[in-house]
Image 1 (cartoon, helix red, strand yellow):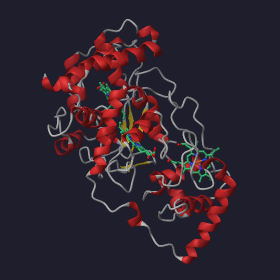
Image 2: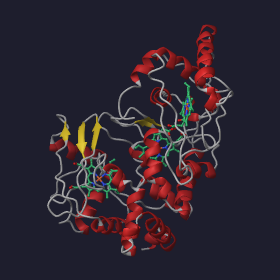
Image 3: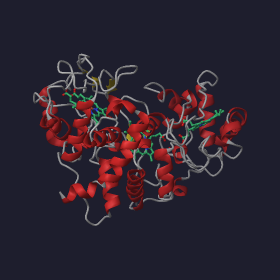
Image 4: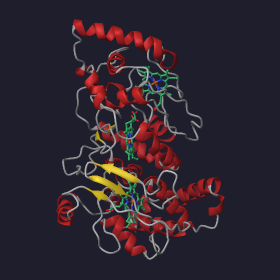
Length: 418
Ligand code: HEC
Ligand code: HEC
Ligand code: HEC
């Protein structure tokens, strides 16, 4: 009980959640307090993001998630008795979210991030379940997963779980503040940040809560390390900068792009100010123990002949990019992200930067940035070598230092969702 009290400054969050719900979904005004809390927590876990097909009914499933192991098609989690979870009770739901087992005992694949959700308390899980039960029933039959051999073999999944799945509710770290623990609970649990921000081995397993950065499966994006100085989340970000990025989607030194824009837009911007601050406090603390050389120590020496390529890239920058990102890569606060001193531009993996240039993109639409300005795609205008030149340039201009990229890197960065 003590733990639950710790995780939940109940009244505040419920009040906040109730306000959000009332503002956004007036038809939900009949929800109980537990359901309101559940709606809030379901947002924090972005359940509908995965359990809603493009253009489909909310929570009715059918979204296809491609991974290296095959395609997973999310199930219907509305209370429909025939096709959804209408026959489930709170124990069945707990078995799914905490243990990764369906009602009939079938082992679930970790494409459902129960490896993170297992940290969620029983009280919070019950609230989410109560909310799911309050949703309109949608009759939509589940589509089977298309999992490749040998990953479709049941014993393999059982072995995988024995090796890599650590079941257990989050336990607080007594040496840290309540705020820090609340942030850790959200980041490690419902926020399932580690589902993307981590390196996976060949079996798709990751080190528990390492947040050490990695390529996201099936989507050609790199989710940076949240604990290293050389990637995103350097210890020089203030708590306010984290808060701004997580709620507005764009801050003075960064922008949440691609899959991260989706997470900010659908989930993080809806968290209460207290919860966002807790997350920021926890995230900032991750970078404080990193033992790494400061960024400048990575600076490669630029050989003379490379300078020519940088000059060519600089010309392209002047003609195509400068109007928005500025003469010195300074951007325009809240509108165009800076490229100078922007860690996602200089980090080791150039894939996100290349993708931004090829495909363009939009930051999240949020209350703090209701009409985000977009970046145009350049794939029709630039050849691969032009993209390589301009990306190499912005990785090395205005005090930035990063490896130069080639047309081969550009080609490799195509594909996947964008
Ligand atoms: C990253 C995508 C993703 C997110 C986010 C996600 N799920 Fe799922 N979920 C899945 C997939 C995929 C499966 C099916 C796994 C399988 O078939 O083995 C699943 C299965 C389930 C099941 C089991 C259904 C059944 O019929 O056995 C439940 C219940 C469930 N999810 C609830 C939730 C809730 C609640 C949340 C939010 C807290 C959530 N999911 C968030 C992808 C996701
Ligand atoms: C669906 C995958 C996914 C999930 C889940 C996810 N992220 Fe990210 N995140 C990304 C990607 C991809 C990037 C790199 C793109 C970018 O820079 O915005 C990123 C970037 C970031 C950045 C740096 C942004 C920048 O530009 O410097 C922060 C901070 C961050 N994520 C925090 C989080 C936190 C906290 C969570 C959990 C609440 C989370 N992420 C969950 C995919 C994800
Ligand atoms: C019309 C204005 C505009 C132009 C022109 C433009 N950009 Fe952008 N750029 C943006 C906006 C807005 C974003 C944020 C979009 C997003 O995050 O998806 C952005 C994002 C980026 C990012 C991602 C930054 C990050 O932190 O993730 C890079 C890299 C980038 N631009 C490089 C370029 C380059 C190189 C050019 C020229 C070839 C260019 N941009 C031209 C507006 C522009």
